[in-house]
Image (cartoon, rainbow, N blue to C red; front, side):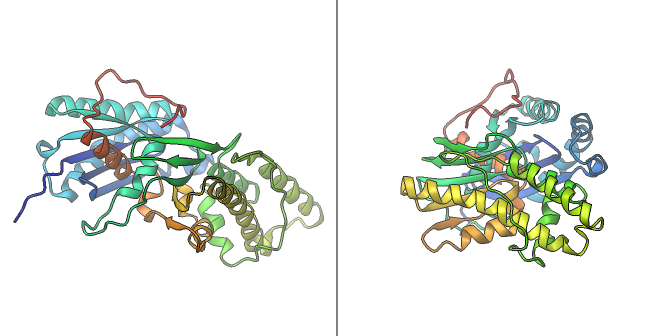
Length: 341
């Protein structure tokens, strides 16, 4: 049997509150282990100090589990890719330090990966080696998460430019904050999605921001929902009560429409009809359905395991950089804020 010459790459993701390790061989995902941190739920959001401590506790376990699931030995690895930013600095340092130490001990290179670049590269991974339907260049990628909302023109595996982004809050953050306003526990975004399936999205109307170009804004929507709920509760203290599904459906439709309006505008202006979706909010059923329903687009929506923060996307980005001998070094410094991909 012919042996694959593709390198085995270990990916490590620790940018926020998911500790993840993955093994890829070429663009085939052999393992993708994700350890979530439930400790933040009672605080209504991610606590940076608790997140970094949890990463320290989990990282050895998830790396070992990934190696076991992939049925490979650490000495088989050819490189270790890790998220270098953006993200929570303490969390990033845990993953970066572990990756560098492990790579140094094995005598193999490290590969520094930008978190947003990794989300885009998630579209080029597969569990099935016979799968070959990947986005063709150039394509537009709507990247939507708790920390970022962007539209990118992707020219190649390494060339991409942001043509639109949020001016304030990200869509994922808006989902979670609005969920808190209407009485849902953290993380509330997935709950809004779940409850919206039983609601009427036309029940309540919320204003849309007027942002030029392909930019986004969600801070005004958060304030609008907060004031609306407060006003309704002055009349009916039980609100939203049995209207929760309708309220969630209306909120979700508003956010999805805001995202889609800008994406449609970008597609029309650029003439690009190959459209990809990525990021944690790519798991939202309303957004997935809206993009997939466009008959004039060739659309790519990632598997659920590749939507939220995960190490497979980091390892995949590392693989493409490995092919170009684009190594990192032991002196790299993680960065907390987005600086371009």
